[in-house]
Image (cartoon, rainbow, N blue to C red; front, side):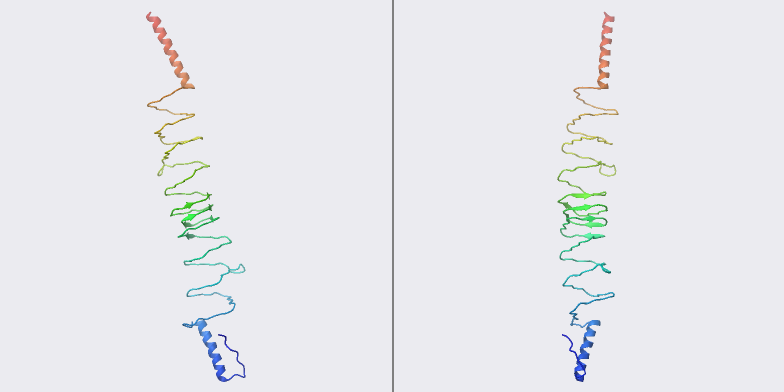
Length: 246
């Protein structure tokens, strides 16, 4: 309720009532009015700092312009029940998503992320610590190193543009239950164990090859020449012994 204007024609009682209304309004503004609420039905401009000791409820929008100090610094938790729309860049040191999170385009540079579902993410340079399961329904491009300390399940095809290195620190075995088609050079520093059939278009052994049972259909190269020369030498020796013995 607005305070009525007074002038020299008003009585002392009217001056007293107007003065008491002003004092009550000032007390409500500075000390709080108990069950009363201070209303400012106009634009409020504050040139200096504003400290709010209790809760701040905003029924309209909060606009931080780019004229002066337009940063929003939150030292505690921030709970957003609606939609968070960011038109510019966003930097997060820690993000925790307890429900489904859909990111159309996300560039994650640093920090720790705990999340449930990412539909599309472009991770360029980071150390991403993902402690829960992540379901990727679209492509994911990782420009930096990615360390997976748990199980990795890939339902579709896996294409490696670079090398695949299985180190000797932990689990360094390669278990292939189906067929393995290798079209390029493959270096295995340990033992290659094949329980099924193995077909080699070309096999080059630079060191000793030990075969307990080997079914060889044809030989070519230096091994074939050496065996052939030994057979010819054995036939010549046998003929010479036959002539010598009459």
